[in-house]
Length: 296
Image (tube, rainbow, N blue to C red; front, side, top):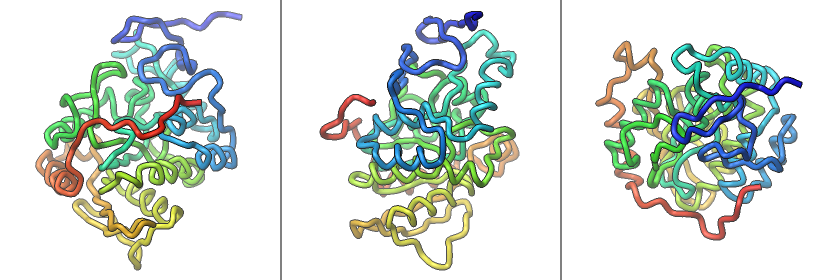
């Protein structure tokens, strides 16, 4: 059997094949070769619900294979669909695990990884123009150590904030199907449950993320206003958590180039929403959860 070609990681210089096998040294890889892999929707439900902490959840997300179309797409991009400017870099080629503070006050929810962003770097909103926007804004609001996120292992840290996505694999044309969104939903449900002890506010980037957050809230026992809230930039929805606290869901247009290049979303608009999040959930030091254990 021919050995797949390997390329050096832009930060560490270590060679990796694409997609990157779990547990081989990629910076921030939460998984090991023994991490259980979901291969069906039922597996996602079981593995998400039994993830005892954020580290375990991220590890299991990062090796998920439950949606065949998405698995084929992300791996095809990693092997032979790379953007020319990144042709000499290894591609993560796996689902995007969450990134940031494991005990967040602010949970940021996006749509899905980008084919040449997260799917290349292995970190949410990293290595593309959308990431440039959200990390710069998080830095201005005090949540991010630096105003950029270029590669896993580049030193970026989030303090008091965590970033996840409604769908964890890069979808063709950035459009996951309804069944794919439903299959992936239990990962977000568990993210919400694990964040609850420290959570103060949720920020949804785009309509799909907004709907995903409402769905996760309903499934995990939160009270959601009726009639169903409608997405719009700057919308704020009061959600009542199972412990009785009101945790607002804030909405922003997505930081996609389609919105930022056309001026539909400006830096000031994004800063204004994050200022509201900051007032509700001030940035803080990175806090490891009590009783954290190594990921499976």
